[in-house]
Amino acid sequence: MAAYILRRVVSAIAVMAMVGAFVFLLLRLAPGDPAAIIAGKSATAEVIAGIREQLGLNEPLPVQFIHWVRDMLRGDFGVSILTGQPVLKLISQRLEATISLSILTMILSVTVGVSFGILAAWRSGGLIDRILAAFSALGYSVPVFVIGYFFIYFFAIRTHWLPVQGYVPIDGGLRPWFVHLILPTVALSLAYIAFIARVTRASMLEVLSEDYMRTAAAKGASSYAMLFHHALKNAGVPILTVIGISFAYLIGGVVLTETVFNLPGIGRLVVSAINNRDYPVIQSVLILTSGMYVLINLTVDLAYTLIDPRIRY
Image (cartoon, rainbow, N blue to C red; front, side, top):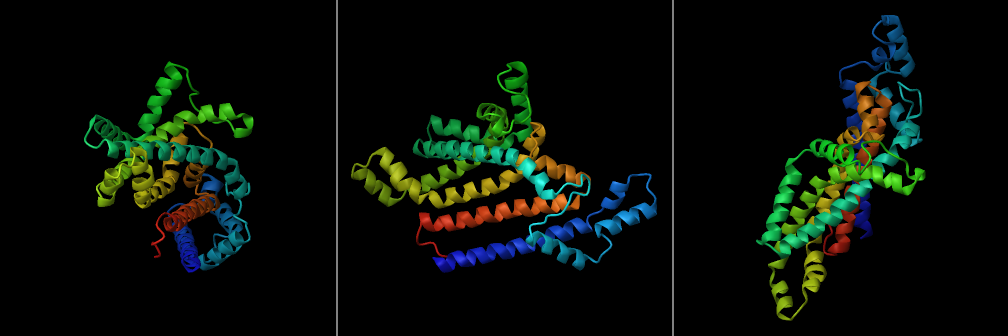
């Protein structure tokens, strides 16, 4: 077990090293000069050259890369080219909204998605199964921004039940914080609920058709015991996999949702940084989000061994 964990941790570190190199090269090779953007359209070549010298952009790429890695290992993620503020400070100011939205979305998606999947498998071929299948197709096919604008129109503008947009930090009160996150959470969750429900249904159907499940039914096991004590545990690996994938891909969905609902999160920060070629901010956000992605996958891989002790890759 310890050797397996060590191999997975070393593998995760190697992946992060490759991601870091790729992100650095991708930004440096992309078109656009941050020095020219900072200087403005009327700036002279001398002014632009001075800014490039100040930012260290005239140094060879290997030297820039070594300086960047060295500073990150020291916990120094640099200073925003545009605002002059430390990058970590900018990210920490935006992190609460993104984490709040992500956690609420995953809680809702996993709870409802797994429940729907179990119910659809248990009533396979029936009316409930067909209704849930239609809901899953709808959740897949409608883009999140369409759902978001519909929610804003109906629940905020027409009925005034919920706030139109914006975000209240959690220290401003638990109720205002939660109320402002209801619409973006539900809008973002629908696709993940559909995804998790379909995988859960397929996995549960496969387990429910096994001989040992028929034996358990013949021995008089209750529906609850068959579903939750026997079937769900044995169907857990693919369900856990899809939950991990959903959580990782959630980072991309958050960007669009934050824009629709005007949430001051990481997504809007990185969009603004990309538009202005703010390299330190883009690099840091990409590295942090990639790190979260790798950490989620590492956690899922380690969790497999708890569900099925036979798993030792």
